[in-house]
Length: 168
Ligand code: NI
Image (cartoon, rainbow, N blue to C red; front, side, top):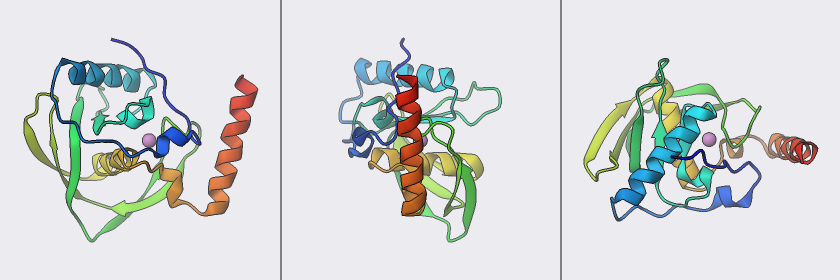
């Protein structure tokens, strides 16, 4: 197991579109374990493989208070979404220190596979619905700040580049 390095916005690799997983092997399961360890260490409630520079459609989520309810989504797809939308203040491990309101469908049905290749579907609401949509965006190369105005995006970009320079 290993804690992986998380890419930070505006790293261009965050905008790469991830490829579907075709083989459900030990390598995939090792990636899932490392991603879970990385998410828990951060700590965060969700992580997409894109964020650790692996461009495959793999997401880990744990929205529980007890941090013992790991959910693994391989090749996740939103198959239906509610008309009702909700605004939620989102953050992201790739955009540290930034929290901004984003509006998304309140409920979504997601189909995915687990790390053994078993298909499942889930009706998500509340934080899980926000999280799964946020993570699927990562797999499509989209970071949540892209929902904000261009002015806000450029402010966030310069703020993060500045803090990176100061940390270096
Ligand atoms: Ni994120």
